[in-house]
Image (cartoon, rainbow, N blue to C red; front, side, top):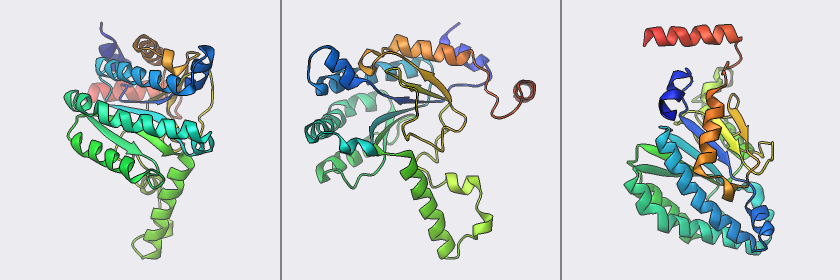
Length: 256
């Protein structure tokens, strides 16, 4: 039985995986090299994980590449990360097209250089017909995402297009960055840290978490397979009791 089929049989298919890629600098320090080398090695893992997602028939992969708080890091490191991001967009675009992967970048773009903003727009345009999606969260913060959605609703109320008493969770969710994609089923964080770090705060209300001790540059496709296998053993209840969730899955299966 393949891993992909096994996932389908659990009753909770794995459609969207989010990853907090942590440990690049620590990986580099262990080897006595500059921190940017850890980030460069981390790019190689992105390719491996994309291959693993194809094996598991995962539609969406979201990577936390650069948080809103990362601007406070030393200026040389930030410049190196922006340069690496630009290089990735230029070097990987053809591969993404060949793999039928749509690239999407979420976050605040206004603080990027005009050149980098254009590279992002061009890459998104060239890959727009992909059937699978790679989301890069760059200059992104979950609180920022929520505030933007709140501002959208406030504007609609101010213009009379929406009454405040009619606002629902569904209305709110439409203003978030990933409104048109399924919410993450699984979030993986590397480097042994066990926190969300302001990532997809709204979207991960019922996401399963998997914490790996491996630094991101050491997180191989095989390590991703282990995370998927762990996910397959879990029972997702979404706030229900175990019996009611199992019954609901049975009803869904019988109606299929």
